[in-house]
Image 1 (cartoon, rainbow, N blue to C red):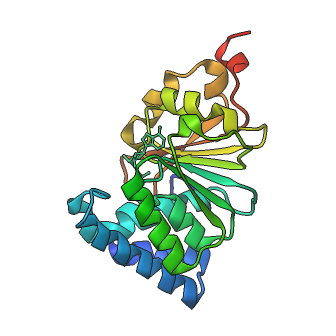
Image 2 (image 1 turned 120 degrees about the vertical axis):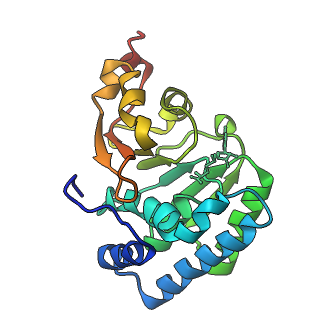
Image 3 (image 1 turned 60 degrees about the vertical axis):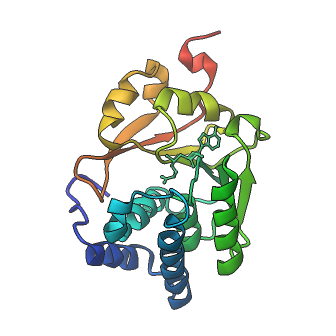
Length: 220
Ligand SMILES: C[S@@+](CC[C@H](N)C(=O)[O-])C[C@H]1O[C@@H](n2cnc3c(N)ncnc32)[C@H](O)[C@@H]1O
């Protein structure tokens, strides 16, 4: 992916991009369609996605999530999705790859939805942790994603303990990506670069590699 790639401007373009990029089997396409339908249906019951985004679900949520997997291809190991909500991006990634996926979400009702999807779509590689991130056991994550979870500084404070030297950070940050990055200590900034979002011309994704420690913040 580079800045020359076109922005996905329609639902058809989003589906085509997913097809071309991940070549999902017919069974996995069916699962992805089912997840999309469950997401729309459940949005009538609880506040999962903005109603205005339902007509553009494949661009705004499905491809927007899938593009993170495209930034982390050919790697394996635990993927930790923080503040997963209805499974964005975590469940989309889990539907397009076999990476072990851990979804961390503190709200019970959202976790009920996640459990319903995992059960109906039979996704044994997905684990749902219903708890505040602050309270979960530390484990080494190969990839950490977080979409609309917290301001960058807070997000990193909460999640640094899951990182190792090889952790890939995938943090969609909308139009404030560069500004938020600039507020971090320089040594932390150095781990990241900025990728253009494929789904929104105004949005960017912070992509990083490495362990974040207090030493890099400048503390002893
Ligand atoms: C704005 S939503 C975004 C959900 C999803 N990532 C998306 O992009 O649609 C943020 C989610 O983070 C969850 N959350 C907030 N603080 C949390 C914490 N400390 N630990 C775990 N989940 C948290 C909320 O319950 C909510 O579902």
